[in-house]
Figure 1 (spheres, rainbow, N blue to C red):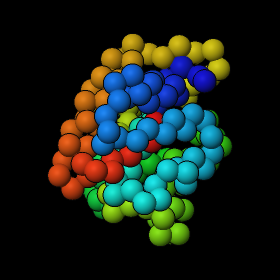
Figure 2 (tube, rainbow, N blue to C red; figure 1 turned 60 degrees about the vertical axis):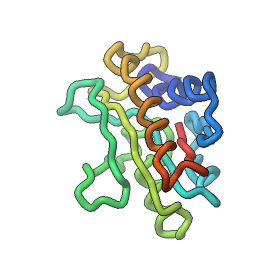
Figure 3 (spheres, one colour; figure 1 turned 90 degrees about the vertical axis):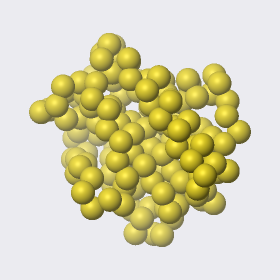
Length: 153
C-alpha cells in the first residue's frame, strides 16, 4: 500500500488492537467496492480514508455526514483513486441501491499529493490516527449507534 493511502488500514489496526464490542472493523484495504461488504444491517457506517486535497495541507481532519448537503464535495476522478472505484462513487452507488444505513460518516485526513508505491506516510497524516480512533469511539458511544457502529477503514 502506498504511503498516505495506508491511513485507513492503520486506523483499522489501531481499532483492532483495542477491541470495542460496539465497533465492527472492516479493513477494506484497496479493494474496489469494499463498502458494499459492510453496511447491511448496521445502523451506521464510518468510512475512514485519506482524501486528496491539493489546496489543503496534509494532516487536516475532515469529519462529515454523508447526507449533509453542505458536506465538502469528494473527487470522483478515478485517476485520483488508488482503489480503482473511488470511495465517493461507492457510497453514491450504495445510496442509489438503498443499501446505506441511516447514518454514514466520512472521517478523512487530507493529503496534498497522490501516493505512489514506495512512499511513506507523512508524519502529519500519521499523527491523526489516534484522533480518528478517538472520534470513532465517541460516535460508537452515542446512544443512537452504541449497538451497531461499523467503521470501514
